[in-house]
Amino acid sequence: MTRTAIVTRAIDATALIAEVASDANGATSLFLGTVRDVNDGRAVTGMEYTAYDAMASRELERIVSEAAEKFGGVTIVVEHRVGTLALGDVSVAIAASHPHRRDALDATRFVIEELKRRVPIWKREHYTDGTRDWVDPSSSIAPSALSASSLARGTA
Amino acid sequence: MYFTRMEVRVLLFASYAEAFGVPSVAVTLRDGATVTELLAKVKEMAVGHALPPAPLIALNQDYAAPGDVIHSGDEVALIPPVAGG
Image (cartoon, rainbow over all chains, first blue to last red; front, side, top):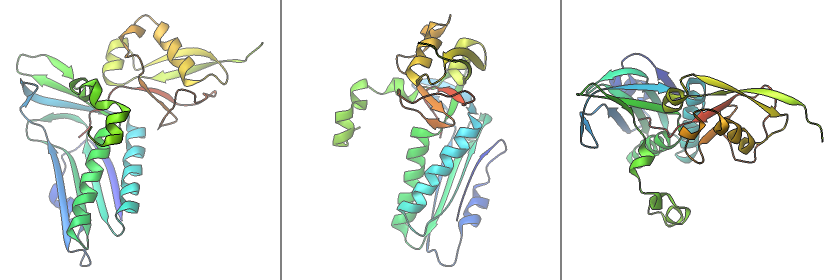
């Protein structure tokens, strides 16, 4: 069983854990992404998330299908929140359960890494000085780290 | 050679929507134009220079390759570097 959603309300992590719970599964893993107070040395007061809704939903669905195939028997629920979030608010939650811990943990890791790489969601940070900037993860990575050869070597 | 022209609406998001000042732009292309041709048209626009050399493009809500062909009625979007999570 899997479920994914882009939501505009607060994420209830406890509800997600309950949703993936099953007597057959001895391991449940939970990942929460939260808004932190500093990025690249600048004090952050909040975060604004926006998405290409239709594609983000589809891409999230694809990632979870891939995870279900890769980690047979896994149950996964993913919610990503959009809109304006305050410090400490949960922006993304991934709950995965499986008969065994390794697959529960690996499936959770797989989903968050692929989500960050592929799902068309963007965030704009609000800083203490009143300014706002779109976060561009690619600009903080040296171009050489993204070269095909480094990806092939698995060093990126 | 004669080609049928088509107008394609290109969706913009986040930093790209901010740079262009609008949530979408219209470009006129020949029917069967590629993603690369579409990109060249968008870059010719007044603020097209604000785009990186090779921005990601989605075609019907899937990431597209430069040689992919665009047809009338396709949903096209320019995808800024994603930053979810």
